[in-house]
Amino acid sequence: MLKIVEIEARLFLRDRMNSVFALLFPSVLLLALGAIPALRTPDENFGGQRFIDSYVSALVVFALVFVGLQRLPAVVATYREKGVLRRLSTTPMHPARLLAGQMVVNFAAVILSVLLLILVGYVVFGVDLPHHPLGLACAVVLGGAGTFALGLVIAALAPNARTAGGWAAVVFMLLMFLGGVYLPRFMLPSAIQAIGSYSPPGVEAIQQAWLGAAPDWRHLAIMGLVGLVAGTVAARTFRWE
Image 1: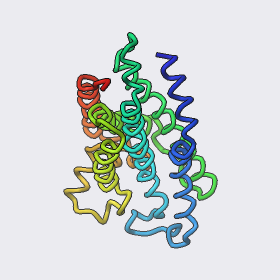
Image 2 (image 1 turned 90 degrees about the horizontal axis):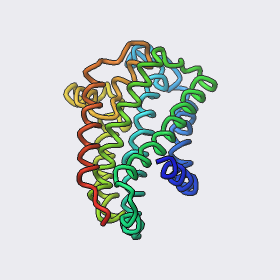
Image 3 (image 1 turned 90 degrees about the vertical axis):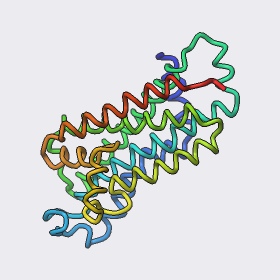
């Protein structure tokens, strides 16, 4: 298992375009938004906060969804398309270990991206550090597990990289919309906001933890359940070819 993680980490670093984008883009986007004076001004629509303060949780959503639904399925599907999985099928390795290795490496990248986002926001714009660090950690872990597990289902079923990209793009855009990345959540209908609160990667739980309240346990439980069910489906349906 350690060797699988080591190899996948090397391959992740070699894919410089996607790895740099995954690590740096949320922070770069925060810097771009923060350069607009109006977005650094307190606004009643955001409870007296600045736009950039309330949008940080959406940037965490972006980091989780991009890695979990854009990179992870494409990598595994490319392995299948190029015959890498066919070769691995001749070894004693169980498919679940390959999927677990992908989870570990990509999740480590997300954690680094979120830590960098916190640092940039605090140092450059004075964005408050997360008021409930443990709650934020639980929200990121469970929300990431649900998101990554959905990506693994696509990776397990897609016959090639093009198909994986098409399927993943649909789920990617849906979760980005529900997570308030495209539009601030206060502009969305209440029903859409409620759905987004319970769907991975759990923008509501992330925002609650950042602002100081413990995340709603129901949000965390649903995301954990999605991760468990989708992860089991991915492991059961995965085929080398």
